[in-house]
Amino acid sequence: MIAYLDCTTGISGDKFLGALVSAGFEPTALRATLEPLGLVDAFDARVVRSAGIAATSIMVAQAEDARWRHWSDIRAMLQDAPLAHAVRADALRAFTLLAEAEARVHGVDVDRVHFHEVGAADTIVDIVGVAAGIEALGIERLVASPVAVGSGAVEGSHGVLPVPAPATAALLEGVAICDGGIPGELTTPTGAALVRAFVSEFGPLPAMTLRACGTGAGTRELGVPNVARLLIGEPAEPAALPPGAHTIVVLESNIDHLSAEHLAYAAERLLEAGALDVWQTPVVMKKGRAAVTLSVLSTPDAAAAIAARMIAETGTLGVRVDPTMRFVAEREVTEVTTSLGPVRVKRWRLGDRHGSRPEFDDVARIARATGRPIAQIATQLADEIAKVPGTPR
Image (cartoon, rainbow, N blue to C red; front, side, top):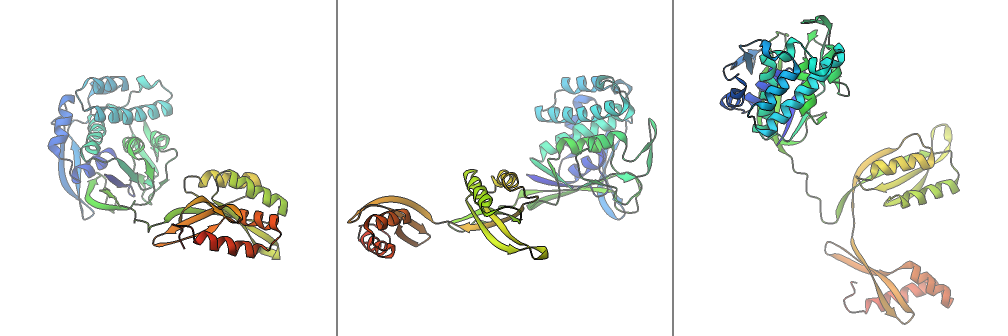
């Protein structure tokens, strides 16, 4: 299954877990997962309304537990608990990211990270619960929107901190973020750790056949729905290509600073690098300058490497990329004995259409050897090849 996490009003552990429960992760299964950790009765899942939107709220009764303040203690607890292997591994990964971020921003050894956020029972419920929910719902790929982090400042156990909090900012390095247009903290360190641990990519909603939708509620009143939505479905099957059709990429760059000899050499190098075809088109650029559009045909997998080769060989400052499709006939080359000697013949088929023709290099070779016009040689060879049994006409 594929899922999309909407973080347009931020993300926290309770919102993420609430969305999973709302989407079908049974509270009884969550309780069974938390029982070995002594937290079976630590939470309550209920439906609330956030700015008129119904959403699932996860409330944890035990705010803190002094036994679990250090990361080393929490790690040992998770390693010793009889959790499912995938749940344990995923929860440890998320907790490790969170602990490393806190250690980094506070300048302490990771095993000595000592703060209320990780030591609290609600963080353990959130992280272990999210790991279990993703496993239970069969989510194999998770995509998220850009993460709204908020703005201003927030009061935490370490005093007043800027938004995003230092640990949140550290966890979201390399992730698309925005302020969301709402003051205050929208994304917590726990939420950021869960996003970093489970989200494989950030961007628009991927194509899917929607099977479930879950909505998790935050606790703050924002004036807008303080929720995280989780859309779960099956990846949409790509449309079947017609017979003979293939997806390809056209790479192009306008070049006005190279000689014809240099461009010809670059074309040869691109073909050696795996380009399917290379051609040049005269164009007129700005200020009336004559130039050439260098076009290269590539497979999608090789496009990045060939674009890099275009830049290296020509010195161009950019390459346009245009995905498209082409129809390619099935083809084979055989050798046929004719009155003018052996000739290679290219046979092709596309759907119910087919044909054959002599290889031009062989036609030219025979024309040069006999001194006859190449058109006569081509016509004679085509006639003889057509009479060969099994030759497509």
